[in-house]
Image 1: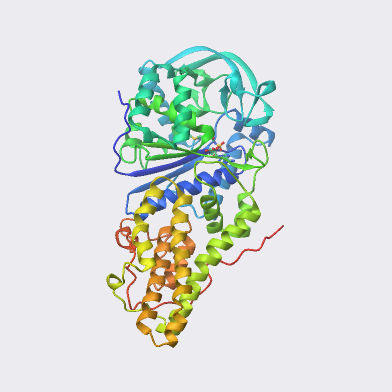
Image 2 (image 1 turned 120 degrees about the vertical axis):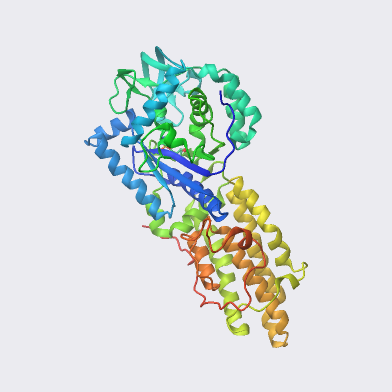
Length: 532
Ligand code: MSP
């Protein structure tokens, strides 16, 4: 039996498969931005990467929403799934697979997987009694509920009492194996606070959970009993596996798992941690399959302290935010401002202030003023300097040389806020360095060599900052690279054959002397609050 995450060669990252009960909101965008950044970062490093997102389309919640809209469920799902795709396009998300649980090939994967678990003796029929939250699509324990049996995450809708025959998965059988997994692989659940939550939940003792429903049409029939419909989560988690099939593949587990499995990182919000960190590995153990490497549970975006969500209706419309401010602004704000793993509140004033301070003032102005000086003092070409000869006392070289390993570390740990902060330190140092060295005075004094060193150091620092920020703000990074004289687009050129390979471009000191610079153009327009 397998209880270890397998050693990975390929890098597969997933977002959750989003419920199509409504158009995507900013919480959906949040996980997807984070996954996109990780995928881009790995690609920058030349790794073989597969990014998966998609939609979770079965279950009672979707069945009811479609009925409320007077649509047949499939038409409803098609419409909302299109909405997700168009949001990803607007947000500049590069995904390789969009997995829909109503896709034809998915049912075959689910059936085969179910059969394996069945053959292993881990499915039995029993009586399910309890409070069901349709919003979570989950049975809740009494002690988790608020007064009146309300779910804390969907307090506007009552939970529903169920007392029915269901098929159960023998989760309890995997208690020890799961505990061993968590102990031997502390990195399996991240961050630490989430890991602790899971450990204490599992320590209290695991109970089998039901994997079928009666009185539900919208889903796959249980392969061994057509009277029952498979529980949406059993079906949904397997959407990650179906996503791995190539379009021409026959839908078999063998085909799906041959190249990209196991997933390197499942990115999820903390509300669905239990499914990913407990149920999912146990299901995989039962089917005898290798386990994912890491499950990272991030925090919630909140409004007035409450989780923003479709069910509570207190969301922020990502389409509107993107129309007003653009993809890089939205990506940067959420990743820089909210420590990944913790909850964070959104405020539009803060949004505008952060973007103006970091991207318009610190980064944008730095490039602009430096290109202006390079035009004036160096005929708009990169000064011919050997960076090895710049003293290590040079403050920019000193910060620049150590930046790569710091940022690598942060990206690998999904600490995007810290990664941005570290990069911005170099940007701020650069602005300060220009003010301190005053190249305009040096130039007047005829100190051309010193002017050349100052300008080279700053141009190189802007380049390095843009390179390292490119997973987060690819368009701004591209604009900076192009103004520095590179013909490169971070949306198209990262990967194994990249013309800006990580091994060289993530280092300080590679900007080629003599490279013609281009005309300065603001890379980020200052934002004014635009009210509509
Ligand atoms: N369909 C399931 C996932 C199945 S994965 C096999 C689901 N869908 S969801 O649409 O409700 O949520 C998807 C993701 O969005 C979850 O990771 C959830 O945490 C995240 N978010 C939803 N609201 C959020 C916030 N307000 N803030 C941050 N992320 C939140 O669960």
